[in-house]
Every structure is written in structure tokens, then in C-alpha cells.
Image 1: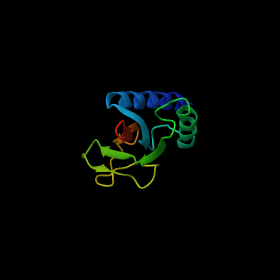
Image 2: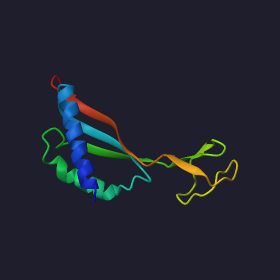
Image 3: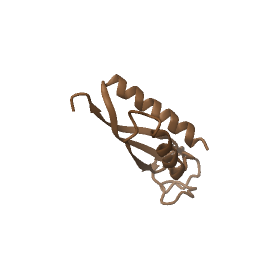
Image 4: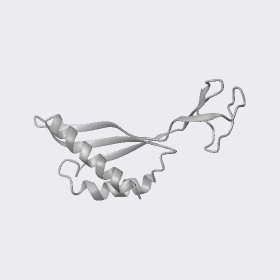
Length: 119
């Protein structure tokens, strides 16, 4: 259950951004989670709801999760594509099975909506 450690790091990162930007709190956090990141979105959301209560700046924040699809690159012909199914095997261009996952394995902080001191 690495979701808890990832959420803990996310909260710390949010607190750093609030401090750097002289904000008071965060209203909304948008994260992108890749289909092949190994992250369980329901556990991630549950962990966020638990951890945010301990953070003064994230307590009222809304978490928005964006699903990031897997993108593959064929190592033979260089064709880049998004497979129709998670079970992929061949390049639709040259039929090679020598593929690399180039997107969809990561989790990224996409945006933060913060409230400043003057608001």
C-alpha cells in the first residue's frame, strides 16, 4: 500500500507550494495517475481524505484525479500510439512487438488552486 506514502509526500509538496507562494491554503489539487502506475485510485483517495485532516493548508482541499492513458512507442519504426486495450502486444504500423511504455506509468501533480492572503 504505497498509496499512503505517496499521499504523505503529496501533502508535504502542497505545503511547500503554499509557503513558497505566500498562500493560506489549497482549494483544489489535480493529479494525473497513469494506468500502469500501480496506484489504486480508491486507496489513493481514501489516503488523501485521511491525511488531509492533519494538514492545515489541505484540510478543505478537493482532490481531482485525471486518468493518464498508456502511450506506447515502437522501438522498430518509432510509431507512437495509445493502445485500445491494456493488453497490448504489437505495433499497428509495422506489427513489431518491440514496444516501450512512454507514458502512463507515473503519477504527477498537475495543478494546485491556492488561496492567497489577500483573498
